[in-house]
Image (cartoon, rainbow, N blue to C red):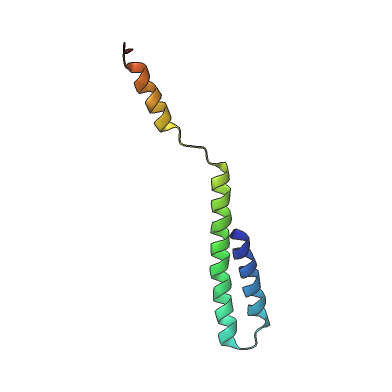
Amino acid sequence: MRWLWLLATLLSWVLCFTRHGPGAMAFWLLVGIFGMIATTLAFAQARIEANTQPDLRIELMRHTQDKERPPQS
């Protein structure tokens, strides 16, 4: 999805600089700015997800509770 954001952003910049009317140029410029922000956030999210570790606290809490219980017969 982040690659689609990047492609749409680049396309909007191209359309912005090839328009002759100020209204169309302003519209595509705003779309390009929004796309730039969305693309940056999408790539940051992918980078963060790639470096995250699984949450092991629940598993560790279960193991410590099992150790504290006396053995059942």
